[in-house]
Image (cartoon, rainbow, N blue to C red; front, side, top):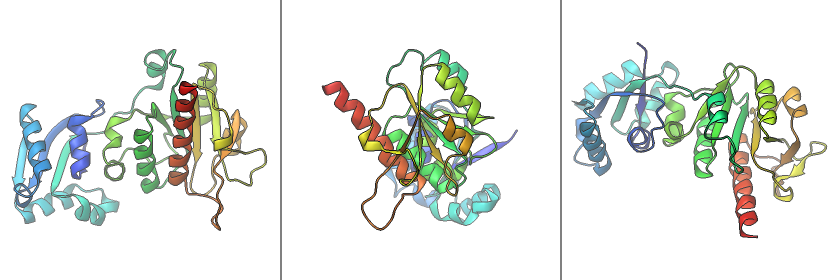
Length: 268
């Protein structure tokens, strides 16, 4: 059996507080020097015991050795610096089933908001987007199975636990998924740079729900085939010398605008 090793207080806390059933927790490992100094770690210990999850206490050297042994190979140094003295040994992340959600919790919901990521490959941006999706109550995130960063321990740490809360759907083909969403009544909004012909500033458009908003990768943005499937192309207007935002910053602005538009519509 393959395991994931998640680290950081917020990430491990989310396994108990907002876990959407993506993984099973097998063990909590704690650096013994952190116990007295952290009320939140003590709370995690209490919650683990109520669920009969083993808690392993290691001295500093033992904890570092455990982390080095199980860290993602490409990110050992980052994990050593940000583990905060706690690790959770879990099953690997289990992605949600989009067809099931469309038949059940998303069916008939007028205000559904999905986020689609087209070739977002930077784990920092991915984790930040997850956090933004949690903050603005996105109903799920759709990623490309082979062309997008996935649900790693680093993504979980950067997302501050949002990875465990949200429904993430891994699909083989983004274009065919967009076509499926359209058949289910979703409007598709693609994001692009301000100078793109036909792009409308996000704060000057009337959004129609249910909707999916697409954010493109760091280098190329959304692909041409994906762009052609969009009902609208939207952008974030800037006022300074910087003409565009990176994908995680743009997602925060646009998701805020969408939810603000929805709120204003309900109040009118």
